[in-house]
Image (cartoon, rainbow, N blue to C red; front, side):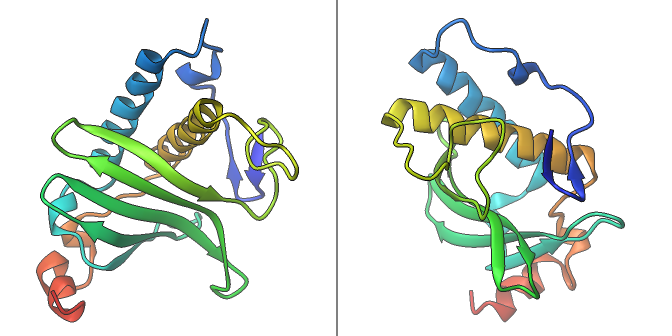
Length: 171
């Protein structure tokens, strides 16, 4: 399976096995797993700067934008940029529910339809629950890929750390 030339999936993940049925409780398990993976990617979500970039040699830069932050929720956008930063692909907006320890995809954009799913194909409208399954399973695979290839948004990795990034962002 191939997302983009530099982003090849080289191993199978547990979620590649079809669920016997797509129940709400199984979807919540995906949300819980995505929350845990996001905390590995972003260990301190309550101390995020407005924007950050994870750079790994030989990989695409992963961009993170803090969209909103409240006491119990945080909304992040994750993306890669192409064409000198003019094209974000994919671009996933994710809401983290810190009290419930869940992460849910709110929106996701792709330049090209995904070959392995009905998600984001032109003219295909999915029921909301199916869209949530497709979007959140995509996020699961993407987060696993990013973590497996060394992406992290650590305070020590950002120029000046989170505190200086927050000051620069006007927080």
